[in-house]
Length: 249
Length: 319
Image 1 (tube, rainbow over the protein chains, first blue to last red):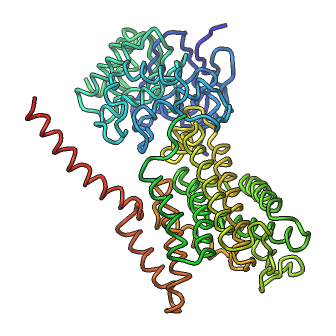
Image 2 (cartoon, chains in turn purple, blue):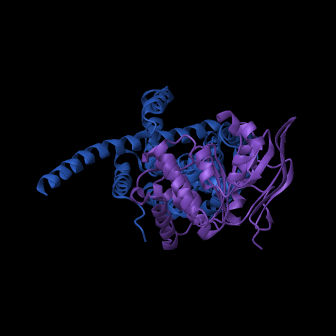
Image 3 (cartoon, each protein chain N blue to C red):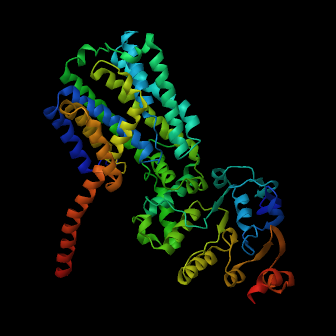
């Protein structure tokens, strides 16, 4: 049973603040689904509920027929879920290849604790690392320290860490935040290349980008779903124009 | 099998083992190696996992008392009481670690400190077992390693074996994951690693080898002094680790050697030797975060860098 990602009436309340209120949507397998909304609309809170960083006050998140809310973050990769971080999140004292090793090894060995062999003794893991680095275009930096990479390359490394375990679902939290135009272009190009091979949930601010690559869009406004539809439908939606796009027009 | 140690480390270890007995009495040389084991073990937490434990004296003392008590009161041979002390320390580290690793940063430091104090007071009050304030004297070495030279050789063997096991651990997948946790615990968790579980593994490893160091220590001078389970000694172990260099595997051994030198040699001429320790510590924290080993690496890299750039230029000119 492959049902993709489902959010069923997810709410997250902080005291009286309803950061996310009764949000439901569904992402079909292989689709690229974007969540947009003005600042403070609850996008990141919703994202954190999906990644189990936060526990929803009510409602549940399902993926592939499993309930994934109410778990701890480190349990999600076992369901084939990987995430990237809004602020580049890498292992700064490890090399580029070792960064990718961390997730690739997890996918290879499961939760088994291994102490008897050297870390790099698994050719399958090494192959995965280089294949992933090739895909994001960082293979020539494999042995460089992660901190030696340029800002945009570090974001790509963040992606490589997410991609190496070959997840079914990719959760991307503002992957282009804080990047230059050129780097934004590289990251979006990479995401376009991933489209169709992974189920992707994207949180993004940059409208031009979103309209171009999304299959479906959910618009959030004050913690609730304002509208959902294809990019064309969203563009034509009067409520959305008023609440969000209208300000820019 | 991969090479376990790089050349500079090997040279350092050989020079240390051979050279120490020439500059110090063999027992003091043995003390350096013993404290070296404890410092390297503590660095599994501090340098490799990013956990500052202020309770390492707990395990050092526990190992020392366990070996000492088994030897003096139950007549066990050192060859049995030392492994027993190691197992006991590991078990204690596991129990205490279950509580400690749930917290990080300052709270982790404080809770390890609290456990250290707790166990200290048990050792202090249970005089019938531990000798209390006076320490536990009369810990006899077995015949075969009774004279100070054969005891030194024994310590060297334990030291080398400990280094090998800890280095294998650091090079293993588990060691790599610990370093990932040190750099970025949230990301390590998001890639599917149970951070608490791995921190506990590091805590048990560190506790076990610190306990082993303590157990050997009880045979160095044949006594377990109460101050080796005191929290101040926890600070001393952290001092050795940082001074030697927490970024290097072998670095903490240098710190242990320096500490022993202060305590054994400088203290004979000047009562206020801990002042030197304080000043050195302040200097290290202010200017040489990477410790003595880090400094050596920088200097070596500079010397090496000059040579290799010169070589590169030559090659460029040649081609």
